[in-house]
Image 1 (cartoon, rainbow, N blue to C red):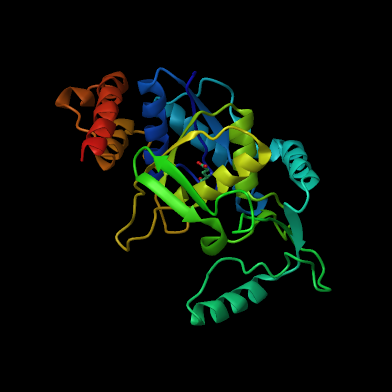
Image 2: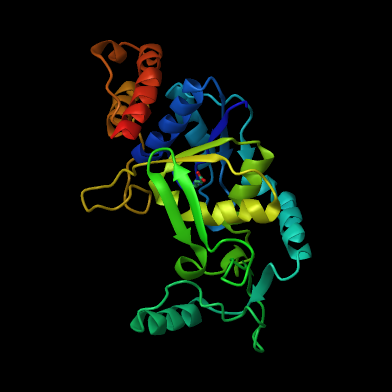
Length: 300
Ligand code: GLU
């Protein structure tokens, strides 16, 4: 197998410390496996995309010594592929269906369900028809006890260990095409990773919860499931995930080694003093330290 990994930033602002940790982890894992490392710009969500942010992210990665082995892929240029994948799902009877629920209707029914201590998943209101409502979004039907697929999706995360999620009770039928006319992240990421032949996904643990949905979608589309590794997310003093919304600062590109050492330390990598000398020295130490860190995780 030829290892193919990737870093897939959303260009909603400049690279910040949280995204540097994901970039570094995916880079180190690819290099530790002698594999290829790709960059994909997740600019499918038009309204959230900040003009110039993608170029800024690519320039910052370059300055930190992380260069992709192939030209970057842009989600915004791949909508024809999402349409094809969606058509493939539509051709399978009953797998996708239009949904006419508004956010408020779903929220209201969830509040009612929550009050009964049942489920927070999409309640499946439009599964058997639109009930006179206009179609807004398209959803993928998740397996329930009547289906051949198991209800509980399981996978072994290379960092977080064994994971399981019951899609029917914890998520419900999920959106593939959004009410605002955009392809959903879950569909785009699965199609993109499959088309790029990605074998290993290394990213932040905020996406751990999306993984079961993505594995289910891979099965529906009959594409291979990559292996997964989710690194701990970086949080601010208030315990919120670092992001543009929570006020994350852009990285200081004049001192890349400082940020890289901080990112390595967040990942629990032990690097000797020599790793401070240059970017080359940093990576020469960080690649074997990454391998050791993963081995130590599995011993505990
Ligand atoms: N673009 C997504 C994000 O920045 C990451 C997608 C992924 O790694 O699967 O949250």
